[in-house]
Image 1: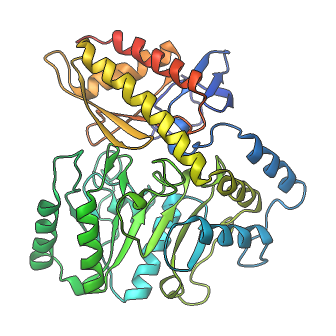
Image 2: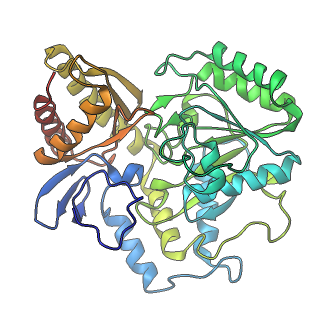
Length: 417
């Protein structure tokens, strides 16, 4: 694909140019039809062009397109903040700041944590992903392709193994590593925050161990450390619940949101307890485009559409169909490269293992190309890029999801064992 005037540093997964989309289906400029299992990398939980969101956006464009909230407040921002207080399942009144992107939410969370605690240290996890801006980069739990050639990054940041049934690390191992960190590298009273994804996205769709989450929550409280949950990819219904931390039985002090928050328009947020969110000085938080009026209209509609019953039904249907297809593929014995399924709810990954003929990463790279030729768009993840992540819209019609899975099976059949 010819990409004139585009930096070569942008990595393109699929060398096609899509022209239009409808729910889980897209068409490229040549008219080729695809079932979209990428979903904007987790942005399109309600699919391409959800009718209710489109109508809300059209109405808002005709009224007010933008106002910089910290200069001239507008009602849309206020309504999103009120809706988040009702939508996010925490026991305390929610205070928030809207941002343009998940990375910006991450950066502001770090500022808030420093201001609230008077500390600078941050603890993150192996294989985590929190954004591509400079401070967020240092939180990411792998070097390539995000950190190499950049030299020293803002810190101090320390990393721990991520405990998950999907990754072979248990809660005791991670807690031992944390205790060692406090003994050897940084004392607990110098740590401002611990940031973790309840379900890793880029890391391969791995659910955080619930026992570890409970122990981590208690440790943070005992040492005055803020617990930040990054739900930029796992939030807004991806796992069958509004937010994935509901699977863990604990609440965060700060919550990062984005991606599917506005159904395709750029909007994200950092939210949490008022006394924490209010720690920076007046004027310490803000942004020109943060909380754009049109994006706010989309976000309000998203939260209206995502009722608990709908989320549970969508997730159960998608999870059932994906798991049944996966079970049949494994049982057939035709695909020796297929490893374990990871994740929870409708946030599912499939590990591709090494075989005598190729590495798991090579198998998955071949599958992405074969899938594209069969008309299904797929996305890799994992430190070795050997985990297929499945992100079709939650609203995907059963017949379209079934067709996408059939195309994926045909693509698997084109791989060499």
